[in-house]
Each structure stands twice: as structure tokens, then as C-alpha cells.
Image 1: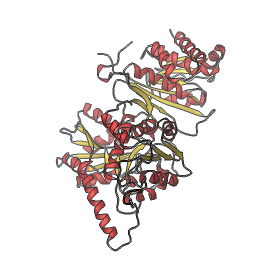
Image 2: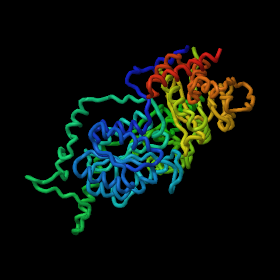
Image 3: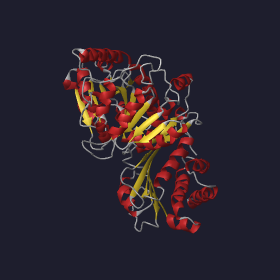
Image 4: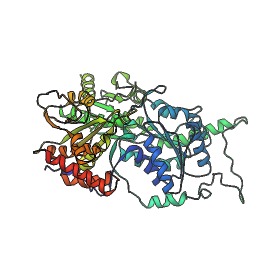
Length: 373
Length: 181
């Protein structure tokens, strides 16, 4: 019997094998989620199924809504009352939720939306894809708004990011998104589930099972003994909407300063940098190792927050002649942000697969070598 | 220095043969041994009678894509799967075939083929559904990536069934293990 190499051996006790969808659901529960509404769609069904069980465990509310639109509207209703709320879907369903997301932004209501992307446009197929980047980061709904979008790349991050996004949503009072794909949702990986800290205890006390109690002073919880709170998205008075837009912009500027996240891998001295997020970044990382083995100085830049996008951090890696290879499971969407960061378009290349295709290490290596020459 | 382990297994067969479970059990047993593992089901409107497959990585290194284009092992439980996956097997790969459901097996140079009438053996044991567990036993012995003990103990976690069925499945795994020299 051979032994696993030491460096991957971790204390095994707490790791369990679960799907990314389930990990996402557990992260939400740990964050104090007490209201989930969703409508089934592949490849995120394990998440809805998980919630149907777990909401019962924790005394929360699970609703299988009659449609995606109903689900996001129910989330609106829960969050306006101060409860931590979430909905999830896959690409076609997320399109249906856009109206609700715009209203959440307009009413400054925190909510977590999970998109486990599949191939599009239209009903497309049920294979993994990254073709909703534009929709997620450039405003899928109408009006001047943004939402923080985090892109996990493992089942562990599905849990960790979801859990944290509830705090981010509350901190800035607005909708936020977990952007995964069919692979991240349906695959199983070892996940450390039980990481409860003192922060979690504080979280629990913030949102209790009793839906009438909340520490959110803005929430509509019944105004007996206090001034009524008003939450609305219609701002007809002259100048009223512009003033609100300016307020939102200030908030978004703050988010741009504080919430940028990214990861660099072997970028030191790199002549060619692969830029990829989510599932593609995993393959990108393996491709970097392979390229380095061939003596090619390659590195990986992985945006974790897709909005706000880490423009500055990416630009810092540009030594004037550095080449960039954007790898996506789309026809080239994040590519536009990479071009904005690098400015010199001639050094920004693209390799993508669509319709459920997954970039292979071999293809990425081949592309990288051809651009480097 | 020992060679780096990078085992890529495709389990394939009909929906209802326990293809997903088979993969999950292998992944659990590998995880217990300290390896990086991943498990990915096949998508599709795969119901009882349709084709299904699951992909399992067991590796020393972090797993890039959980998909598999060139497997190191194929566990083939029915005829359509044989045609679909075995052509892609790597050199020195392992092919485990359920001859109860596959009549002709194409010879591929450099591939180790283990042929057993898994469904018939399972039926003889009293439950045709345990064919997948016999295959797990065959794999465990043939590859020696993790000890038999891991599989038997993980089975209890993966299968939430009553004791008699757990015992039957364990028996099937042990039978598969004993089939390989």
C-alpha cells in the first residue's frame, strides 16, 4: 500500500465529502439564513433540496415558489422584515429574477442570490458554463446599480464565500451574488464544514428565529412606539432619484475600495499570465504548473470578486511586455475587464469554450505557448 | 521516490446500477487515505434504464478539473458504456468489465482488463443491486490505492440502509476483493 504524500494529508476528522450546492447551502445556514425561496432548476437542485431539509432543522422557512419571480419577491419580503434571506437558481432562472434584484438594489435590501451557471442563451443546456459574467457584473436588471459578486473555485469556497456574503450584504445593504457553475455545484469535494467561531455566535443573536426580532433598525418590523420606516423604490420628486443615485454611487465607491479580492499564483517574473475565475482558474492553475515545467514563465491571476473587479492588482502585474491569456467558459466576457485593466489590447488574448465545453489543460498550454512566441 | 498518484476513474452503466454510489464510495475511501479527491456525476435526464456515469479523481495533488477526458480506470457495467469510454483509456490503464451485460470486449493493447460476470455474481448472492459493490472490491484489490478496511467503513456512512443490507453490501465488496489475485 502506498501512502499519500505528506503535504496533502490533513486532519481528516472534520472533512466531509459534499457537493458544492450543499456546501453553499450549509454556508448560508451557518450565516444565520432563516428564509429560503427557490424554484427547481438543474444544475442547482441539490441546493434547493438541501434547504428543504436544513430550514426545518433550524426553524427557518423554506418555500418552493411557483416561479423564479415569485421566489425573488418572497426574498424581498423576508429581507425587508430584517431576516437573512436567499434564493438560488441557474442561468435562465436568474434572468427571471433580474427585476427583483434591481428592486432590492433600489430599496437597499440585503439578500444573497446564487447563480449556478449553465449554458445559454435561452434554455441552453444543463452543462457548466461561465456565460453570465456580463449579467452578474454589468447590471442584469435595469438602473444604475451594482452588486458584489464572488466567484468560488471549490466546494470549500462555496461554503466560505456564501457565509461571508451575508455579512457583506448586510454591511452595504444590497443584493450580492455567489457566481458558480454546474461543475462547482454538482461536484463533490472534501469540505471542512464545522468552522464555527465566536463571530457565528454574534451572527445568531443578530437574526433570531423569531422573525419579529432584528437588530436592523431600518427593517419593517411594526412601528409601534417608533417612527415608521419607509422602504420604496419609486422616487418621483424632482431631484429625488438623482440624490439617491449619488448616494448609491458613494456606497459603490466604498465597496470598490474595500471589497476587492483576488489570488495570484506563481506570477513572480511571469511573462505570460493566465487570467481566469471559478472552475476555469483551477484548470488555469494546473496549466501554469505544466508551463513552468516546460520552462515557460507563466502565472495565474484569479479575480475572486468579479464586481468590484481587481483592475489595479491585475495592472500591477503588467511589466510592459507581459502577455495575458484570459480563459473562460464563455465566448469572452471577463475578457473586456482584463482589457480595461491592461489597456494594451494587443497583449490580451483569449481562449474560451462555450455551450458546456470545459477548457482542457492541454489546450490552455497550447494557447499560452502560441501567444508567448 | 514514488510516482505521483493521479488516478482518474470513470464508473459507467445504466441508471439504477448504483453508478453514482460506486464513485462516491471510491472517493470517500480515497479521502480517508489522505488524498485529494473529487466526484462528478454525469448530467442529463438520466433515470433508471438510461446511461449514467460518475467521474472520480484520487490524486496526490490538488485537482484541477473534476472532469476526465483520459481515464486511468474504467469500470464498465453495461454495453453502451464500453463503447463510450474504453477507447479513451490511458496506456497501462485498468478496465473492469461486467461480462453479464457485455458480450464482446475489444482488445486494447497495454490495457489491463479484468472481466467478471458481476450482475450474475450479485444475483447468486441474493441481490442483483450489489454488482456495483463487487466492482468496488475488484478495484480496491487491483489498484491498492486504499485498504479494504477504508471501503468497508466508509460504506456505512455512504449507505444509509439497515444492517442486513449493509452486511450484504460488505459481503459483495469482499467477494470482489477475493476475485483478483
